[in-house]
Image (cartoon, rainbow, N blue to C red; front, side, top):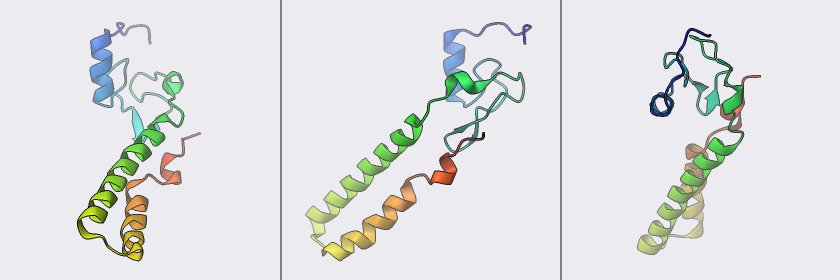
Length: 108
């Protein structure tokens, strides 16, 4: 749309942090967890130029891995449980905190 003024860098950053369209600030940026919408519902801005690939998923998995490994180390040092208790605790925890594949699939 040509009637929209070009936003400043600070406006664009604030709109991105609010998960709104970087151009108009009204439409939603995401359709799901880590899934971009194909375009803005308000100004029809195409979001193909901001495709991050697998970066967000890897970022979330690294954060979740750090949390689980840190918790496992604390439990090991403090309580020294048997190996099967570690497996019973941390395998479900990893599955719970990491995103599923169907959650990460893009709308094509």
